[in-house]
Length: 465
Image 1 (tube, rainbow, N blue to C red):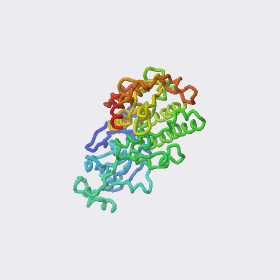
Image 2: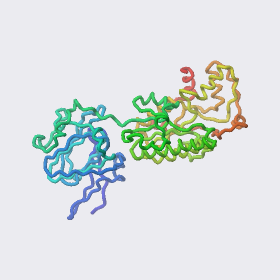
Image 3: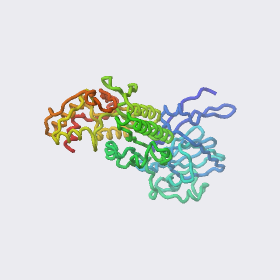
Image 4: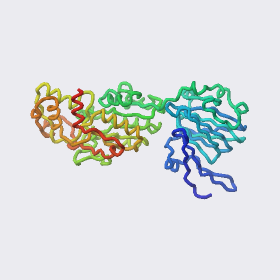
């Protein structure tokens, strides 16, 4: 036999449903084909859907017709022997609901059927063998999540080669509802972890239909986390949860808690995402770097100074192994809750003249902008990987930002005194901090998202406080 050739992909009117022309090669012994070959299928545009089960259906009579079933998983369907007339109807929520596509399939053709698209076929030759790969395991209760459509639905108006009154089909398929009575299959859900934090609250605004869970509801470091949900029902998990007590992490108890939440818990989350085809969005930090470089691009090697940074770097390395991942690296986070800006505004109001470090430089990252950037990456299907996401504009020191807060709230900025990090923490138990936290934004800007200037955003934040 000759060397194998790359399969060819054809699109259909149903979004995400593809017809694949396979490389079927034969000789005097019969034929051979690579029915699913990941390294060849992905470059032509098929998703890496991760099949876990292979099912085979034997049909001995011409006209055997199997009903329009939309299951909560993806399928890769093909014919091993014989020929079928295939019919697909989009039963997902959205503008394409009810769209129909039909095609004849023999061993040289396969079809990728996305989750929620109804799949049916009618045999055109005797002894037809029909095969399908799926990316979830069948279970006795799986049928409760199916969506069905009647084979004779007048709206879909499928032109069956063999009239249904002459076909062989089950009573269940005869009884399925018409399109007007079908409940569309909802898309896979989005879950946000860390719901009670500053970023978690901002994410509620951009993901209004998502599920939100705090640590009390769903702890990624708990032993039962990996079985806590039917994870195939989720398409996206945004991990805004983390152990962030930077100084406490340097203590024996804090060190253990930081590693449990930021590493062991993240490892469990990564296993869940990998096993279930979930897109994992993980929020990272400038603390994974030592702050000695003028700026820290996404591909800079890790160089954390303290326990918190070490655990976040380890978590980033784990998340990077998930096939579908976004690591969103940010710094100096400001949102709804206790934070540096609110503290400075409170001190100004009370007439307190603070000392603030003036040798740590970076940009503020407002949670509304981080949340919007995360939503942008997902909505635009940006390439997976690491993205810096902070405010834009000219970097500033903490002292300079404090002075600006004083000025914007009508107080004397000269009341703020700049001191070095070494002076500020002298005699205090404290974790080491990176002195330069500037994160270049070229990569996320190339996707079409430009964060606001952090000092302009600061003014907006204070005016709406």
